[in-house]
Image 1: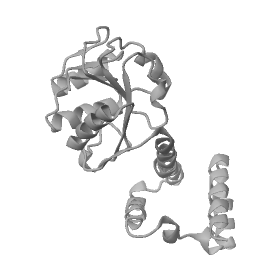
Image 2 (image 1 turned 135 degrees about the vertical axis):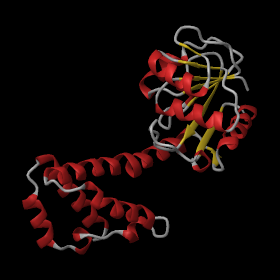
Image 3 (image 1 turned 30 degrees about the horizontal axis):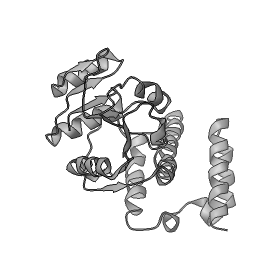
Length: 249
């Protein structure tokens, strides 16, 4: 399908890269950030515009959730299929007389980090079976892991992803604040982080838990609390340990 990708952020960038790596043609990129669009256009040799949206068969909207609805109103082609990439929005957020769909890649995206797109789960939803099949086939060119999913399932997938990715990464960032405050090299902890993630490939996360809270080692817990000077760090430490205790009580 003749495709336009709308957006210039992390998701848009990686969709463009995945399409190009798999010889899927992109007719145009469209968005408001000219500087970022120019970078992507230069890297992948794709035309772009900030004011003229070309006619296409498929529009993929890869922008922040808060502006998906407004962006969708820019598409006037009633014969087109329009898909957003959000895990937390229904298809009905798209405002237009075109056919509506969702094309959700379950991954954390940063422009500076290469990814193996064949391993990324894609979740497809469309208003009719023909469009669902078309998007399923498109995603299957990119990934070995493609499924259909309605909004009820997709929003819980997204919620789980926030716990499994965003919250975990935030804890990494807080851990680095503590290591930096004591002039400790954060690289000390990379093998530990790698092993923690590797372990859940083989064990249920609940069975992989270690540490003073699951052991109910109150001496170590109190020692750590006394060491923590930052109020936010202390709140997180206490909250996480209470959650661990409750899970294993």
